[in-house]
Length: 287
Image (cartoon, rainbow, N blue to C red):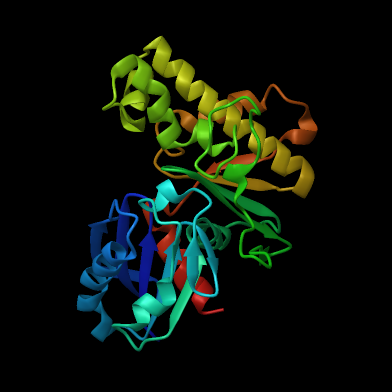
């Protein structure tokens, strides 16, 4: 049995672990550099991975953004510290000779969640710093010829909505993500407001917090309904720090319940939590 060095590059942190026979060991983590310069991410990755390389047979990386030919490009650069593109595979190969496999983080998490799903058509939705998704149709993970499949966070939610980091107004991500939730709260609670603060205000029954979180949940519900009716998705798994917050899935379900039955699908809580990307990309690399 080979040992995988699994890595998850997200908007706020980069996590790494060794996975052998499904068991995760030697977990490590660093902050994602808040820099638009590639050298900052180079340094963070080398610092994180170097202590683990000698015990690994291959490297499998789940990363935010579009992954094509070993290069990350971001629809919303703010999700990766401002980096618009980054040569991930070649950067890793500068300090490691191990085989490198790379997949979008939402697609990776989807593949992990699908392993325990007794259906053929499934989608995973992550609501965190941004909004991402992964889709399985007829037991196959959709990646697309540009590796862009599943970027449902950039479906249109409100043509008059906030400007999204991708350059279009009113994307789902610009309304429903943790970043968007925090931005919506700044006018009430100041520039230091973030998504966690708004969620806390909501749970304290502050009407302004409730309104912001309800708008997020309603936006996700509409996105789920559109995916359900267009792709005949049987089960949606919900993850991410916002998606897994207390009461959030219930709010999505409440909004879906007001729609015609044809738009309904089963909604489930993601099983792997923060480990979904790590587990999923290690499994995918073995395919």
